[in-house]
Image (cartoon, rainbow, N blue to C red):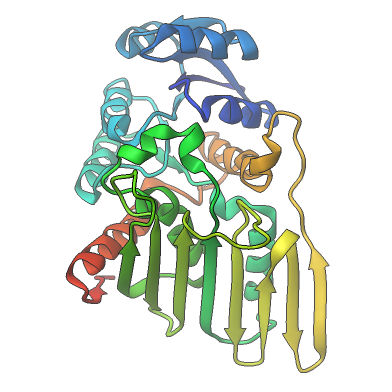
Length: 341
């Protein structure tokens, strides 16, 4: 399989973890990095042996023979870089959330369709080892038809310490973590037909919400509650683990602390532990999240190589964003929002 050459757009907090993930996947090589602050780009280039550094994205795309770009900048700049890549007929992998609004994200997807290039979304949360195992249990039909589920991501991790710009977002939790958790809901249980949400701002030094509860009425009939918070202090916190409890017609399955998966039917309870793999470049505090970057990269690369379709295309991710912004609308109006299928 031909090795694909790519450029990194953005050299911020997540750049080193993206590069660590690419280093664990065969078939792609980063040949250039852009950042508006050149010194940051130089640091990433030096650490990962990237040949060329730019502080002008147009110059980089004009000069470099590339197969795709990996955009990991803040959400407000995604549209600019995706449109720029589309102008150069380059496939794009873009960080989540895809756009700051559903309209902008749809325009980005349309621009890439017109250019005839893929727009893929780096939505890694669904690629976590324990969540993939949970999906396998559901697909096997072990607990029967699912009628209710709860997905919980709640902790008091000081996320603003290493990403202070999050404090300034008017819309924070649902766009940042809600994008992940609502994508997991779709991954596990299919599409939603209704959304009802309530949000709160607990931290007093931020602009957006830091707690949200989202109730999804799934098209298949199940009810799924998503509890998301960076303002929940518990005796034993397990950041950044996601907990899931699913009830089915003949049993239940629980993804609990420390990656334990327990499946209960009339035959009894069967338990197994599914921790993530460990990587030297990953931050232990983000272990399960950083490890999921690797299979996410592998899936996106396979799509760019023409091996198979990607799971998280722009078209798929627009469905997740529709849930995110429907949740904001519901929280604003205190009314349930009906979704068109």
